[in-house]
Length: 297
Length: 322
Image 1 (tube, each protein chain N blue to C red):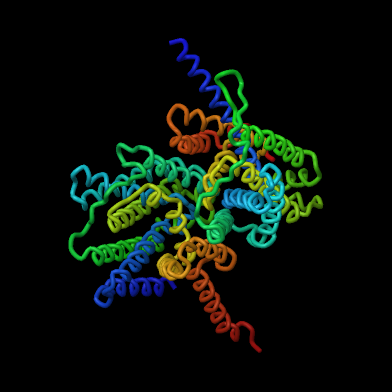
Image 2: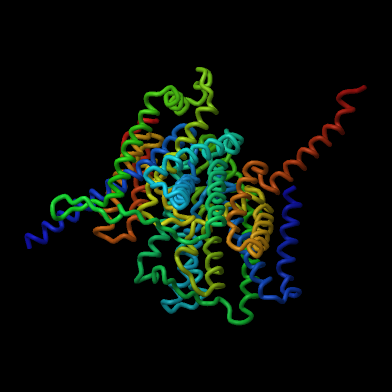
């Protein structure tokens, strides 16, 4: 009887720790989305597709040159930054000032092009890479073990999340981005080049998704529509975190990871995503400013 | 302009009704079914998205409830047609619930909430295995016994005709003007006494009923449904693309949108196989960049401007004598 209770306790702790590990990657995805949403008020439906491109980029690098994904993600980040930057200058800038829905449709269309373009190039097959690391575990006591690749990606995600936070809070560009978020009409009057800052922010947001993709590669199956689930999750995080607050989105990412893992433990894996959406709808209808305060980017 | 749109639409329906006299091939019937089904769905979406300006990307919820309702009620021993009626009622009930929550939100938050509801229903249908069969799916009864494909096609054309009739009424009624006022500026509409909440909810109920009928027909064609097919976000997106491509907030728009999108998709599917979503993506980007009012909307705009020029040209000699 006692032993069973202790086992329950340890499996819950295990689920929470696993949740924090997954959540750190969610946090990175959510921060990228929140940056884009905060600065441009754009709901980026291509976010998951960016993540998917980051995964494929890291995968191709690994296959061709043998570059470890934990270094390859840097290349993916640069590529995704350029992709986001060019997407802004080429398409998004042209429809500035049009309705929200036009922006949603444009990013949705771009995401479809990326996803189906990838499918044309690489096929719809599932891929997986094998790292030696995959079987390694860190044991804490007898009951709890943490998977090595998740631990590494946790560390990298934490460091990059802090870097992103530093960029937004303490650099000139980040300050300009926050100024635009606060008042898009006054910002240009203060000498801020709005398009340049927005393009840069969009690139950074896309790069964050790409990094998350690269870090997910060792622990996830790879297929063209892999990103779709993350687009919806990123919305959930942005809403939970308070629209456009990047530290809120980061917190929401960790919470989402823990909630999903606990749901899987008690109700089964198949309900995890449903709980995300129910949480999302509850927050949206009961507390639209999010649960982590209303501080903007 | 409105009258000529109505005339063309009526002509299309008439052509659709006589098509079975000429067409014999089953394949062509299937394509025509898809065209008229998505014309009806686009028109249904257009009532909420085009006229009331509430941009839903969650209409798959009603589509799926229509299909699943038909399957579940007829499994309970009810004849398919009353079962379809009950399924539509169920979808309307869901619409009241979904609308009640999500219409309190505006702009992108509304759109996101509609997606979330449709996803919750999809996951529910996947996971409540004892009721819905989960990913294995459910059999759907055929709504017709004799000359199955042709009868279903004619039912889809009739659904399109009904949706057109409702759209024509909305475009000219007091109710429709309220909706357009809400679309243009909800706060101003509220301030002059339009009961925005009630208007939005009513139009969603109508739209959901039409969508559920479409879902029932769709399920009946395949005789089998799975959650990822009928509750898929792709259905919601396709409905929106059909309406936006043709022209949101016009009578003829969704009809033209469906005709172009579905026949193009069919042709390209045979050419490129898997890449038809790529075409949707490109079409979306092109429409947003170059035809934000849609095909019919842009044409109407241009014609109106031309007639406006003609009027000033006619008046000019009187007002500015040379």
